[in-house]
Each structure stands twice: as structure tokens, then as C-alpha cells.
Image 1 (cartoon, rainbow over the protein chains, first blue to last red):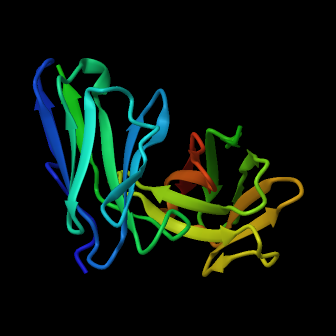
Image 2 (spheres, rainbow over the protein chains, first blue to last red):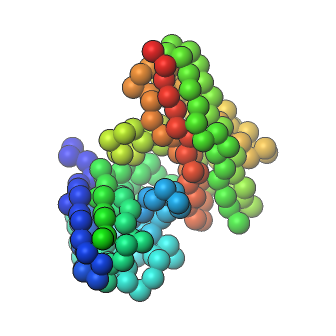
Length: 114
Length: 111
């Protein structure tokens, strides 16, 4: 199994630009999670999908952030417009069914907003 | 509110020795799950061990074991026969109605 796939692995952009992060969960997994990791705030859950439906988006920082899961094998996290404080490592994870199951993390996308 | 506290920002252990990483949490829930994740320099988050709160028996996974004290809300990780590859950041995670990760403990393994 290829594991959770994230792209791009690194992204450098300028303030105000739109950024789209992509994630392909493990085949057969029904739950998908987006996390953000920073030195200041540690690892934070942004949003959680179950069967492609957003269940909990209370961690999404503000309206500039949006996430979609159009099908079971693909999800995007979009930041528009991006700001320097969005610089972080963004992880996608998936689990078989629900948040109680073991989550398998992707390699992360390191985002730098200048 | 639920919180997770890892009181040891850094720990070190001699190769082949045993080390224990501490984690405490605060919750009013009775049903939840606890995890230890490892993040090596590659930044990939890897599951180390998982514990269901309703199970009294401590989880064990090869050289890794936990000491789960539900009443004390404590969930420590013991690494036996430490290896160089164990060097990483270790995160304790609480998953109930919400998700909380600790701030991590950086483990150094001394050859």
C-alpha cells in the first residue's frame, strides 16, 4: 500500500496567493483528517471528514481556509488568500473508520508564505 | 476542557537502556482513546501504540509499552532496549469527542 499521499511536499508562495494542498488517503479508509503543525501551536486538527462529509471543521482557523473531499480518494485544503502566519507543515491522515481508529499520516506539506 | 500535557520537552537515553515518557490528560469523558505517535526528522508521523480507555490492560507493541492509569489520567510510554532509530519527537494524543495532541517530547538516543 502506498500510504497517504500528499502533494506538493514543499510550497513557497507569496502573501495573497492561493494555495491548494492535496491528499490521497489510503484506499478503503473512510475517514480523512487535515492537521497543521507549527512550533508555536503544535499539532492542531483543522477538519475531519467521514465518508466524504465534513464532520468537524471547528479547527479551521478562518474563512480563508476551506477543505473539500469530492470523492473517497481525494481531498484538498485551500488557503485563499495566504498569509505569512499560515506557514506551517500541513498533514493529511486517514483511518479505516472514524477518529478512534489508528490514523495513518502522510508525509506532510511544508508551506512557506513570504 | 480536555488537555494533554507532556511535561518533558527533552529526554535522553543511552542505547539499550529503558526510558519512560510521561503524558497526562484532563477529561470528563469516560470513553476515549490514547495514542503515542513518533515523528522522526523526516517529519512523518508514525503510530507507536494505541490504548482504548475502557481496556484495563496496558497496550504493548514489541519494545514499546504503556502504563495507563485511568484514574490518575496518566498515559506514559516506556521504550525498552532503546535503539538509535528511536530518536524522534514523541507526541501523546487524546481522542474523544475532540482531538488533543501534547506538545511533544524530543528523545535523543546516545550511542
